[in-house]
Image (cartoon, rainbow, N blue to C red; front, side):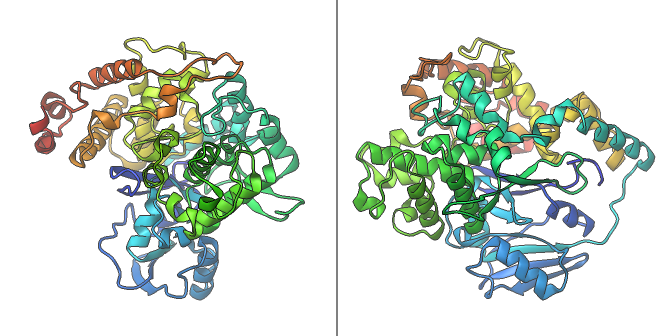
Length: 549
C-alpha cells in the first residue's frame, strides 16, 4: 500500500544456521511492495534444487529458471543480469552472493543492491537450496478495505513523517548514535574491551555526512528518505560506495578499533558484494583481533596479517577472506560462536554472542534494561526485538541497576515491536505511530477490513513471542540459552566515563530472568505454562512443554 514504510518491507524466515532457533531477517526497499503487487503475501520454498536456480515471479506466472550463469556473481551483478535477460529494468530482485553459495553462517540476502535481510544467516539457507535469487514483477493493484479513511490516515502519517519522530533518520541518519553512545560510555570498543572510543569523532555521523555522503534516498512510498549513500573520495579505496548505517559503522569502526571511515565503507561494500551480514562480520573481525592481541591467533593463522586492533587494511582483508571462505576466513565464516570453539585456547571468552548470534552496537554492561531484552530475545543478540535500550539511554530508568518489575517495561515494548515486525513496518518510522497499538490497530483495520482493537493487537504480539519461545524450546533451548556474553559478565567498563565499573554479574542476570519469566507467565525455567498457552489459544502446542513442566 502507500502507507509510509508499511508497504515496502519483507521478511525472510527459516531455522537459523547460526542459532538453530527461530531465524528472521527483514529488509525494506522495493522488493516487498513488488511481491505484493504480484499478488502474494507469502512464498514458501521447500526442498532443494538439483542445480542452481532462481525463481521468476511475474504476477500469476511462476517459473524456476536456470542460474548456473549467475553462480559466483555478487547480488548486485545478479540483479543486473536478471533484469537484462528478462528485459525489464524495474524487476525487483533479492539474491545471495558467494557467502550464501558457500554456506557461510553469516550470509545475508540482498535486495535493491544496498538493502539487506541481514541477520541469522538466512543467505546460507537459500544457498543450501541452490536458490540464487528471487525475481519479481507485479502489475496488480493492492486493494484496501476502506480506501477513503485509509487515505486520510496515510496523509496524517506522512505529515508526522516530517516531524521530530524521524528527524534523526532524515538528517545524520543512524550514525548519529556514535557520539551519543560514546558520551554515555556505551559504545562497545575493541570487542567490548572498552565502552569509549578515542577516535569517535572520525567515525561519527557528523563526519560521515560532511565528507562521504553524496545522496540520501528512500524506499517505496516513504516520505522519510533515510538511506545515506557514502562514496570514498580519495585514497586506496577511492570510488567505493556503500549505504552506511550505525550498526555496520560501529562493527567495523569502534568495535575493531578502526578510525578510518574509508576502510569502514570498504568493509561494508565487501559485505554487500559477498552477501554477508555486516554486523556479524565486523563483530567476528573484532573477535579475531582480540584473539590475536592475546596470542591465541598468530601470523601463521592469519596468513601473515598483523591483526591488531586498529589495523584498517588487515580488517578489510579479513572481510574478503570471510566472503571467499579462504584461510582463517573459512573458520570465521562459521560465526563467532563456532569459530571460537574451533580455534579453542580460551577463545570462547572473547566471542561476544547470544544464542550464537553476534552482538550489536550497544554496550549492555551499562544498559541493564536492554540487557534483559538481549538475553531473552528469540533471535539471539538483538536490539531490534525489544528496543529496551531506549529506556536506558533516554534516562527513563536507572540504567546501572535492575529492580524487580522492570521486565514489565521490556515486555510491553517487546510485544509492540513484535507487531511492528509482523506488519513489516519499518522501525525507523515507529515514532510516527504515536498511539502505539491503537494506531497500528487502526492501520490494520483500514487495510484489511477486519476490525482489530489495540488490546487484540497487543495480545497478538504476546502470542507471537510465546510461539517463538515454543519453537526454540522444541529445538532444545533452555534457560541457559538466555545468556549474555562472557565479557559483559566478567569485564567491568574500564574507561573514565559515567559507566565506569559497570558490568552484569550472574546473580543480576538470574534476577533479571526470574523477573522477566514471571511477568511473561512462564516457569522459572522459562517455559510457558499450560495456563498461559490456554489463555493465548495455543493449547494445540502444549505437547512441546508438557514434559518440561
